[in-house]
Amino acid sequence: MTLPDVGAESDDGEEEVDYRFTLANERTFLAWIRTAIGLLAGGVAVHTLVQPTRLAGFAGAISMICLVMALAVALAAFRHWRRIDLAMRAGRALPGTVLVPVLSVGVAVVAVLACAAVVLS
Image (cartoon, rainbow, N blue to C red):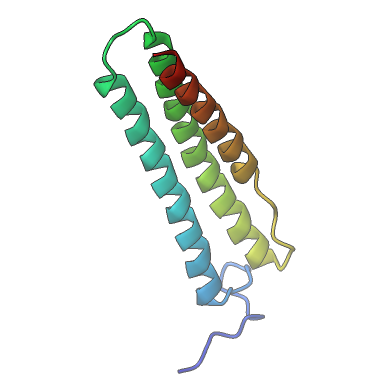
């Protein structure tokens, strides 16, 4: 089995990238999409399953944060996948991502709200 010549150019003038790197980039994209789907499911579940009580505001906030984070992660995942693909084809250094800190802060906020709702119930 021979690997494609990494330095070769395609017909459209872009550098061909080793397919293993392209597939790794796609796997990373799919992992972010799975995360977005999980956040979406969590937001819908909280909205649907939490019984209306005096703490309904917590449930609404948790639900909305999950849904907004799901949208943000899904959009940012595509942007990140595209930026990585373009950087690989141009032979540039790979760009960083804001997905990790945004997701970390968002999940921390949801956790604090959920803890507060449990303590106050």
